[in-house]
Image (cartoon, rainbow, N blue to C red):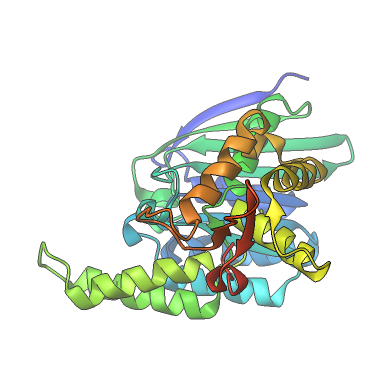
Length: 313
């Protein structure tokens, strides 16, 4: 059966109505959007609740925080849903200023997996609509809708979704984080000055640091290195060789099917780069001073006090 493809704008049919109809049937939903606002969530809240309760659907959201456009009210609402339902998850993609790859997070992806009597239906939407009141209903938006029984386009989009989900920039926000984010956003929204208040700048820096301590979807390279060194310390090994670190981390990412995320062909260079950056004498401006190189045994490292107490991703 050939896929059905539609191109719609909100002027001829609101995207919110399309999503409502998909949620009523779906057993799996994945949504990744640059901006989320409570105005958008209000349109679809009942449909989301219906999918979670009546369909026992598994629902995931990934929400961008660039430019502090996403509002805290919407994040708090998602957090409440997460606390209520085990089959609901949501993640944030950190602000560009906080991300390792310096990318602005700007996708609008909606994916629905539905089990029907005549087979499995795969619906996906890509276009310009964010999860906001305007984006879903009144803005002039353009979106393409794919409905398939053989998931060709769906699988391509799912691969992109997973590429987003399994990155260091993804984290699960806590209620405390959301509250701090909301306070900063309020200050920025109120400010009419071009120069941000020094106090707000300080809060933004603190918020960035808090992100590193929140759980993500994949372990960071530094966390894997630190945990491996700690395991060796328990066995009585004061220093650990770089060669052993290479072998252990490659084994870990293969076991978790993360080779493509960490680019296995250059993974050892990446590991060495992280250790060199965060070695106590590196002098790198971003150094967290996590490791000490042995003066006696070439290519061997132990943890500093910072490394021992490291709690980031």
